[in-house]
Length: 547
Ligand code: GLN
Image (tube, rainbow, N blue to C red; front, side, top):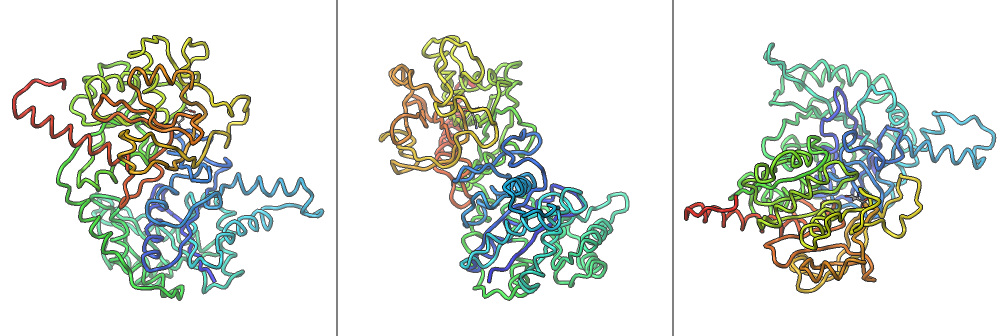
């Protein structure tokens, strides 16, 4: 029988519930257990696909094409259990299912209500993951305890121990213990109040994980245990990590969290195997070199908007024992300032995905600079489309070349709407989404990076490289390095005459893991390192350089 762990959060949002849940998943997997991860989000959007990155951060795409919460990115980076559309439900989806059922007349004349119909639907979504082969389902509840919209989810998880036996269920609550500088003291009261609120709903947490800026010590955790009705050893402090989020699981082991969970849930777990992971963390803490990568985007000030891109850059850095410093540049800034000023001293340029035309011209200028000054360049989705437009304008001499997303009357729509997208009116879930196979052209830089000729990568776009221009581009030096298996869609372009200029229509950042960096990110950082070495060699030799 599968056990269920529910992770809730209190006091404030942004406590890193997703990271903690993913870390718990990792520890249990590394004790030989089969784990499934799930996130329940209380907002009304059916999925985050229609939300602005300012509101929600990145939209994380799964193989099956679901557009999901960015916490699922943490799950995939920390654990290996497959995720699919059942791994992320929102209030919008739950209501949609219930209302559709009501329209079909399936409630047989009953009044349809939040309790029991919405809560039953939530329970069904949770329990559907508990297949016979799964040892533990970890379900993270989005939002903060006390939010009105979270109540049906909390009510549903309160009922689950009654349905499947309380010995099979565990509640973990994550809170914050703030440190008040003026009083020189850590404060436990907000945690007490948050647990009171949870107990008011009928949920008694089994474990409290308290986030703190600095260690708070037993005196405080014992006090929390007493006031919150939790065993002393089950109050665990999670101190902010100095170097990397990948240290979180190590910190939790030091407080015995994996053992506590295994004992309480009577799990038949093996010994914890963390040697390789500890080595990885050692490598993260002790880089031998560093590079600076410019990321030019439209939502740059929102840290979560390009979450998986930043993580993937880090992973590639880990693979090369290199610290990757990211210089985040607002694309529109490049329309106001000379690219040399903003891109001076960077070892690589990455232009990530995006929608809408704000900042496009700045991205194109940055790419032109990287192409002309041989700075390693990596284009992702919209970044690839901008690289194609840049090449068309400045190498092919098609001055008004553009994407039909940004200019409907351009003479040269080098990026145009995908055939299947014409006539689509609904915005939600209608892009070209999810895993698609791609065939790589032998002898290209991409082929070397992947070391194989057929790959599968995740997509999320409506526009594509216009096939009418393929020959013109190839003849001028932009190689088509990968296409869909039927050859119809251009998925990868690169420049043979440049040290490293690769741009892809898909999102490689969704398939990179800390111990298994994505091959293209790895190749990109390697090229950046080479440029860095070349640059320092040139500086030492006193040569003036296009810096
Ligand atoms: N806006 C572009 C398109 O729809 C790129 C999408 C993206 O970068 N994810 O094709």
